[in-house]
Length: 170
Image (cartoon, rainbow, N blue to C red):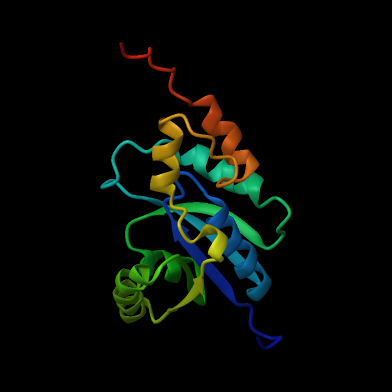
């Protein structure tokens, strides 16, 4: 990075919930870029989120409190438009498995075509390569302990939402 240009990255996602894999990508991106904007996507196609938009933003802020160059916000609509609006120089995406690359690559090319902004892919830390928000929600709702998969700030809010235990079937 040259010293005269600030390089800001957008890390978009639904973060429902934020996982330790997400946090790892944010930490690594914050060491590379001058500023990282974690942008929670407001996606009307994703029905029944576990967390409200405000809850997701607050959990991310708490989990990233020690990262001075990380900001948290949200957006609706096209990522390419949001990137241009905030003047970001790059989009950051984490890749957990090879199959993630297939979908992310075409999206990255479309975003570049629309905004002129490139996407940087950060491979997942192997410890988190199998962890997804969907899987964490699923095992949590079935009563499993997910403490090792989510930051403490997220776990605290998740536990407050734990569904009441079902009576044992006979």
